[in-house]
Length: 286
Image (cartoon, rainbow, N blue to C red):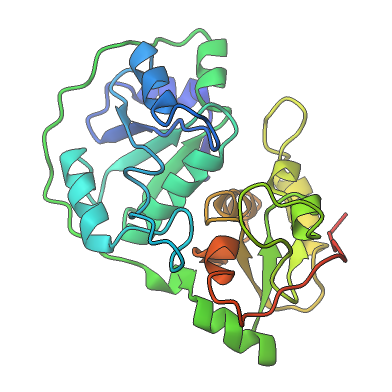
């Protein structure tokens, strides 16, 4: 199954009880923390329920210890999915405003918790509305499920594993942030600038064309193949474990599977001041 689903395909599945649609709209840096939910209330795909990046897809932030968007525990996330009516055999479709970053985080997290059939709506709500498909302001009636967590922790690496690999490279770190942040020239969100030593830069926005659609699988496969000739498995990170999932989604769309996420990412890495950082040398696969 492709990790992306086109609007015209989703439109044929609206009456399928096995299909659970989740709206993940959220804007990082937005002054109004409920902006995404307000957008949902103003209109969403029929039967869609809502997940908030910071309230639902993240655990509480512990200053000086966690990233800005730490993963919730598997138990907490499983309880949330029960309330949303998600079952382990559900076909879940997630969407955002069309940037795909929030949806990618939800897509990755649902797979991590044990939901196998998850897709991201290609183009998000913009492509849905652009295709003249229906929207509603009504919230769906939800029958809670008995979902049980089956966390796939092999999809993750920890900060300690990242530290260990600095001495003995066993994977290739890929940073999804913009070139300027990777190089340490600017840092709008965190209190230290730069990147993890040995990482290479693949800004997640480069996965899409000017219209906001993903590049073809062939183009993406070539781009990610050009990133490194080390032959090592790729581990993705970003500022807080959100946009890194966009790179994982793009790789899977290109047919490259089994990549991993350092979920804590840069904002967790810098909580320990003895951990090394690097600046400059914004290596890319271009």
